[in-house]
Image (tube, rainbow, N blue to C red; front, side):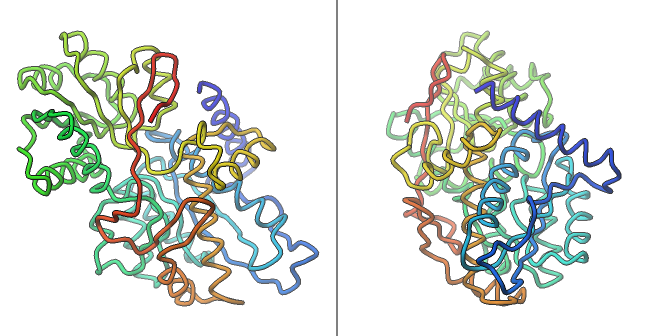
Length: 390
């Protein structure tokens, strides 16, 4: 798992080199964008992506972006039908205002669609700009569930909702008879959206509301007050909605109080940096996941396709990289269905029709309801030696 961090470092260094030669923002272009000899129409779709390449959540952003670029490069080099994809990636530092500025720039510079934003507040900002300019907002990571309502008809989702993740975690607790649930969440848009999802899931499952809820500073490791408040409530399970540094600090300090029961986290935590931070102390942490395992699900066609692409690159397989790869494949299919020289409206029409697209043993519904029973949410268990078990 630690190799993943080295892979991110290599990618980050490459982005730094681009900046050094005068790029106005960290831009990762797909290799060549040129037509293959089998593509003769000059058909191209420009894809704009704003992600955290630096700052909080950069490891998630870099992994997701790298997986997306891996698919796009392969599509441009080997594809025989449909358009080439020009992927333009800008750094927003996990800051919603920068994401908003990046969104306006990407669209004004010719992007046909905004894609793969990482972060709740950044996704909200990007979706707003896309809606104002008549563009699709495709495959956000950790977007708030309100972007799934009818008022946001230009937003298309590849991953299940926060509500789906919360429902899976609370149903698991209910099956085990764990009734006293506490929630620790980052004090930001993502944390508040996750807490709301937990509260809504408890109501839907007719469970008691959380016995304690505590907000913590996003990315911070000073968690003593949060630990004291949660310990006082004597929970049987603690659900966390925070990035890996905060999650790791809380797990470590909470265990010092003698707490020996369950920790559960939303998928936004990112397994690899959490394992790096906790090491053997990660044992017993249960993480919600929304795509197949890139380490053990080699019988799933899309995983095999992803691992083959990773094997020809300097990347290391990860859940976030696989999600980016899947999202890019779904986007390429939407662009193909939109027809030659597609308008923004034609792209959205094609996406609206993709309610049961098989990317390779894994089905994607770009128009899912808030609760989509067909979309699996896996709860995985991390062992002390870093193995991921379902």
